[in-house]
Image (cartoon, rainbow, N blue to C red; front, side):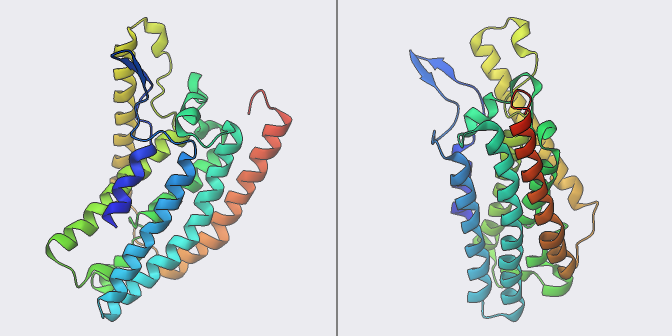
Length: 260
């Protein structure tokens, strides 16, 4: 769980390119041309840590928590993947740094595909097991869920993985829909290239911090869903919405290529 959570953020660009000692450096840990596929593949692996930890505890509450997690993540992976396809259609690439560059001038994808943004946001809450979708560890029903039998560092690692996933999903939402490190009007100030790059990194950090605040805000605002409500939302609301968003984005992109 912790390994998958920590390596996922490697392909997220946290700033523009800078020139250091004669080298043109991209501000990201790993520059791969299939960044979105890499993230979706690794986040899908996260369910194994939760499911196997619940099964191996030999505890009925832990097993139920693990099974809930697998069903929940399958429900929301589909909606999450489909909402990302709208962004890929607009950008024409899987490279995350290129997707950020194409959102320059205030053309953020949240304005281009608002339904896709909402779908991805809700799916990311379910993906990270955060309230109101923390069914795998629902205390009133499952004592503590999949990590009931764990204590000490193992217990700490599970929670560290959850918060690392929260940071990664916030960074991904900012990158795909909120312009990433883009700061509208920054080039008009006439700053040096290094100062501009540092301000862009700061802008990215502020956006990610705002998303993390939103995660915590929702946790203390909305009560936990019932399990049947969660599955109904995933299959009967989120999936059709994601498909409609994909269709509308494709039609608009085909009809107005200069705008969409």
